[in-house]
Length: 387
Length: 96
Image 1 (cartoon, rainbow over the protein chains, first blue to last red):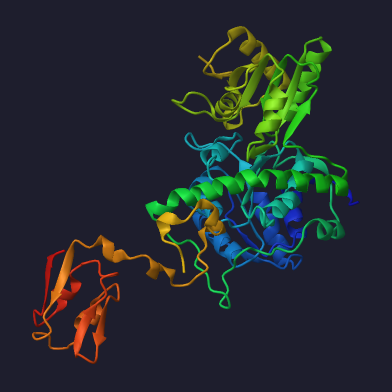
Image 2 (spheres, rainbow over the protein chains, first blue to last red):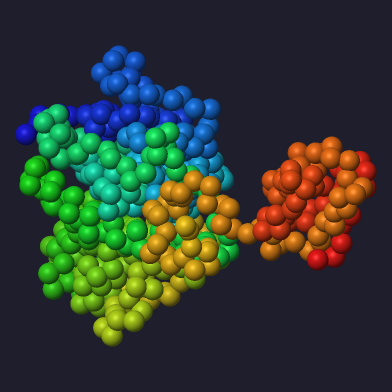
């Protein structure tokens, strides 16, 4: 077992990428992802990591380099945030549709305007339908462990899809946490060498990224949809294998004090740790409340979610992104759609909170729960908005 | 040989839409797009090869035995470049 050290989460994540012996890093620095890229540049410059570090001129180029590198059979990593992801977006869809394994560290940050460097989930929701495996992290250890997990899942021939690790900007990227490091032996045992399904090689000529006529486009998209759904069991399998190695068990749907809960809070990312404190306080005062942490966003663990939510009377979804002019915010819409056909579906309320880095305290979460239960609103409710 | 595109099932698509058989674009008969067809007069033709060079679909080839050029209408899209380029007016475009 590795050493436990107090370290900034971004630096630990970059160290994990280094331990995975990545071949190519192509990234453009953007707050709050900067420390990840800077530390990887340091590792390359100092000779600790034998990788090609490509200092690209934009995120559009970063993702393009990543596609080329993965197509050539190299272990590939990138990191970005908000506007960077927006600039990448065109190629993000291409990476998954071409089934190119790579790992992206996404420091979740609000999209402009107004210009904000602070945390929410509007950037990742912008590419919700991009066809990547998308996971959310609750704490620093999870971010660190996710790097190894992401490479293993992404490069697995049964998956062969890019993986996006969602890490709340500042709330996770810039905090110093005690993190248990992996040893080189552990990584070697966990992560096999990357053997792609197809590569660009003169000995066996293939065409990648050909165009699709109307006669074939629908079939190509269906194949991607099935591939993403089929990645679910591999994601879980890789978490189970990690549990044997580290003793830390991750699940696609994590339950917290849900026994006999009438009310459930459902959220993704670092806000779950805050919500768990609110749950503790409300449990102490005798309320039957629990929390669901949705760790795996794509592919959505539908069976586990239905099972976790079906018994509750009320579900309050903490949404960290807004869908202006839409039926509801992204996470709530998804949960409502999922539960619509269930005979004993709970009431599902949407609480949009923590936009653009607005602090959400355990007390805010208690107020949100009470407001939702009293108000019984059907649309989205923007918590804490003045006026 | 690759199946016609409109018969391929989603299960048969290579991961990522990779094409493992080089040159299989020839299975797709782009000649079906044609609305006009070149009409070639071998007697007027001065054998300058300009149509052969300019054809963007490589649909024109020499027939040495008969000293004429022939069109492969599986791939001739009827773009009219050959007719436009011909200095002897040996090619004219007609409705297909």
